[in-house]
Image (cartoon, rainbow over all chains, first blue to last red; front, top):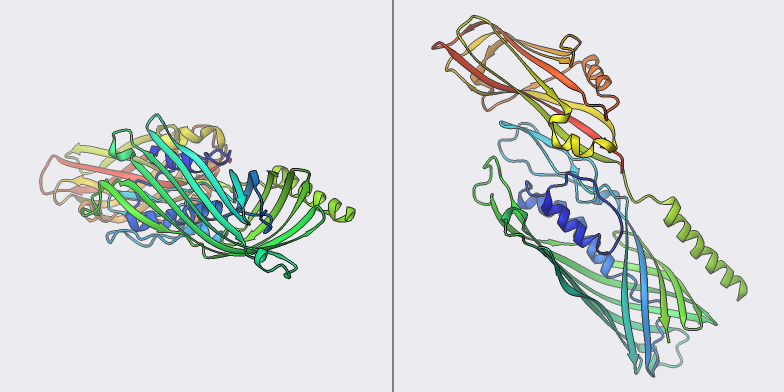
Length: 301
Length: 181
């Protein structure tokens, strides 16, 4: 239990403020089921890190600076709440679909030793979260940084480093009536929990990449913007697979390293921003696997 | 321009209000809890009667979530032989579950022929009638109040390849806990 709670607490609570039910334990899942259970979390990481990266395609030619605080609301789709598990060969009868990390109804199967119950999930319809970022620009090119220094508390280490590089290509074509920019985003998140007991060992490394083309048009203080983004995400996850019944002698009772690719591919973003002197507020909707609404408050000068 | 400003600010306020007040990120939370009680006997008589008790509060999952429980629902149950003297068999295996008073019956399951070894690695799935399921669920209402059960196992005309014989077995039933987010 400590294992999964710690993953969730450090990976989600770091960026949001929600509380979770007890009794969520991934240790008993064989690797193939653990991968399916965690896949929506990998997808969510990609959705989260690849959101809120722009609200304007116009990049100043002379020095510019932005500091932004972004809030997000990612809706968990129904197809990310359950998966079909793979019970061991000696299970009696079938197991129905069971909860993923975001789901709420766990399944079970009957074995010779008793009922095995799959872990429940976090029972979330949506994931609220937030992030902050800095950006500096020069020569129509912007470098954005997201940084959370690696910190260690108790037996856990957590860190985040992300950056985005953006260039306003319309600056080379003054006749184009819109501002158009291209941007790449790379965000990495690391978490490790190690209290010396292998049963509680957990490691998460989320790697996220995105490339987008976005455009904006300003009407005085108001800007409308939109973009198309390709993105990919993968999560390396290590956990202790506790096989109390010895159904999986080759893989059980040892730390397993699995790689979980997210379901992120493309997203469409539409939004608007309003500028008051050096302040900007913006809101957009991101149509992707987890439809995500973002709002941001920025200091932009 | 002023209209666009007003529209945008209105949209932001409405969205923020929906997020803060209208949208609950939590879905209902369900946990699956297996309750089990063991039967153990060493004897030489022709009948076996074993009684065993259990309470919801015997299980950590129940205690951990007690304050936020909204509902407990019966799902399914099974009988398992853990160990038995070779050749132990009899007639009319009767598994009965009572409320804490030991007399109000919740379910009674009978199979006419009992061979203990048959259920060593192959549990007996217990199929209840709808009335018995309703009895269970009715007893499990008010889930924050700890509920206790008395389970009995009876077998008649018992024979075994040696005496005294022993039988160690368990009754396990699965419940679903609905927890307030």
